[in-house]
Image (cartoon, rainbow, N blue to C red; front, top):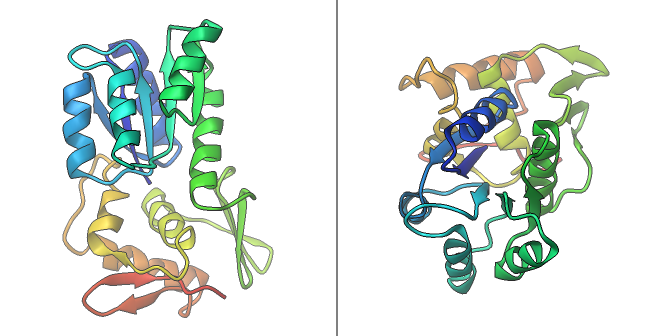
Length: 219
């Protein structure tokens, strides 16, 4: 799942980037409002984490423009402006949630999960597909109630597919899910990991959509 992080403080930004990657997200980190605008115009993201006090173009202006253009990307605002009036302005500009600095990284991750879950129409943290259960919070997969060990890349692909059941995911989108892993993405990476997932979780779990990519059908 790909997240756009917009934060001009190097210490805060690096901490957030590392925590998000460790949690299984792919992260694009931008440090000013203009670069963030370009990223949003050219790429698709599941979530925007946005600081309001940015150089170049303010986070408030960027957020207001997004909403005026009809972009409904979930937005978590992080800012040092912690007064009630500041929170109200951020929410009125179109934020879905708001955290004032300083904050706990665990709370940021919890709010990210909640916003993504809400945007996908999910309420529960556990997704069930026949005899397979995927706990997206604990990052645990079970089959026939027995835990199945997955690599980080297998987990990234599985969660992208299982949270979009019935909707084919292109190879490009699945590759985007792997950008947070530092060893790169080779041309056959997706096929290799899909094959491994089928061996671990059942041959009928993932269907190949010729010319498009892969899909997990709704049970």
